[in-house]
Image 1: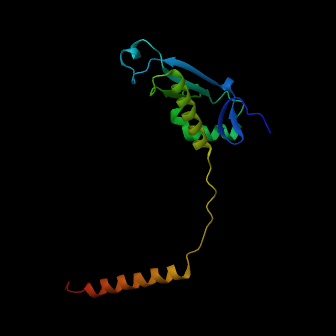
Image 2: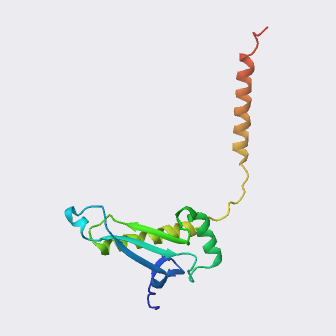
Length: 144
């Protein structure tokens, strides 16, 4: 069995190495009472999309198009987590959010296969159109 790879698991076949991720601590405005004023428990997680060696050019282009509004001018994706009192839990939450964001943006739906309507549905549609037309025709007149 393979040894687990170090890094952030995004989806099968894609694990971001730790070297491509960086985080900084920041003051959190969330729960914590007076402690929030002196302890940096929040986390700002950075992923350099442009400098990533683990993504193919096609994946980078897809991420740029899907997450373009979230990217900095330098091509970094930022995820901020301040919802917990502990720095470790905020780091875990930020990593989880980044993985979900990347996996969602890289997910591709299968191409739509064209289908034809069934004979019964065509028959019902034509029948309804006929009834509607008949109803409107019976209303008419009286404009002279």
